[in-house]
Length: 98
Image (cartoon, rainbow, N blue to C red):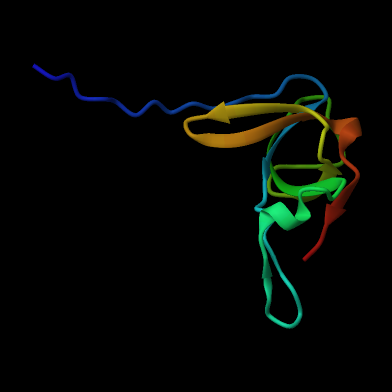
């Protein structure tokens, strides 16, 4: 008998000054409509992402904010097939207002 796989609801709650950021795809579109693949922007020193969770000591950002952070900052974590970054609040460079 084959056991059915169950979906596990996993959440990541950052502690203290840490935040969880879900990176936004690096694929971009130019003004002329050309789509640049992520591989063309891999050398960019910064990435953008959406804050999904905020630790109790992290100030100035909240869940849902779009932020800019250094590409090599933080820790890569994979939760339920979704890749996220766990960063210190001090590693965030800016909030982006679209």
